[in-house]
Image (cartoon, rainbow, N blue to C red; front, side, top):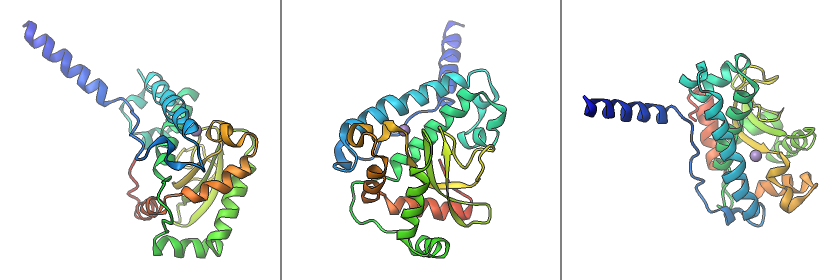
Length: 226
Ligand code: MN3
């Protein structure tokens, strides 16, 4: 009987743990993106800010419907949930995407399909960068700028406040993000202070176009994974 109880407890703990959200490892060193993003900023951003969103998300979902949901399901129903769930689920997902679309690798390129979509939507890569930077620079306070695929499978640009994103049912511009730029001061302040535009100019040196291309392909097919 005792043995059975212990086994049940272990099983319960196991199930509870798998229902919790957790951070993936960043696939490069904190210092790998220097000089464009400094190591101290990366370390604090990942191990303090992102970690706090995950911890607070796991606490906020306890006893709610969100406990049984994947993060995208939470976003699709986010208007039903507390601000704590909205902010921390966004904070978790947005940062996972952000780490994955940055790289120390030089000269990654968009796939031919993504390049074609960019040229059709914006005319050129330079115009895309200008427009995304403008969306990021004019976001008042804290938030994100997005390249996303809309419901017509067209590529588009938007920005959202706080930790919102285009997957949320409350977003003004809805779709699947393929590239997100964090414009919270915690993303750049140590190196760039108040010069958000300098950070935005620098970030194009470390965008992982291989990963953005994968996200684009999956978004077009409607199979974008977390
Ligand atoms: Mn951040």
